[in-house]
Length: 153
Image (cartoon, rainbow, N blue to C red):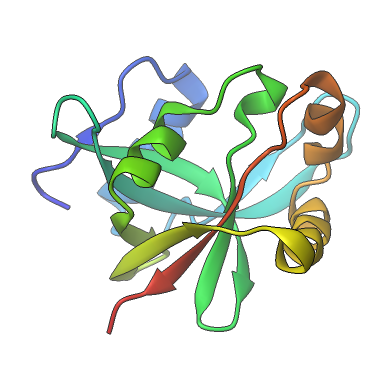
């Protein structure tokens, strides 16, 4: 992901996380230790998602918690329960071809937003790897998108 930039306006903890991940080649930062408000400390798997900006055409890197489904990965466009979707989600809707780094593994993937039974099943799985999604869901009127990143082979 040499021509990709770290997404603008990220909080410092995310910037620090991305730097650890990138500088170690993915050996540090893949498993992220965090203590969310109201929860015990947890270790959550994190990946780096690179999207193409829908307006700028520039490539941006975002750190996201994830789960696995088949040979793909599940991510959630929660934005902490904000009323609008995160920018990275809007980018991948406009251009679903993305790059993903999971630990030291790098791959190209196609993003797709899931619905119906698949969304319900993967939402339950997402609550297992990041329980605060339940709190985020209560804070917003929008349906929080659940996205599968299918590897392109």
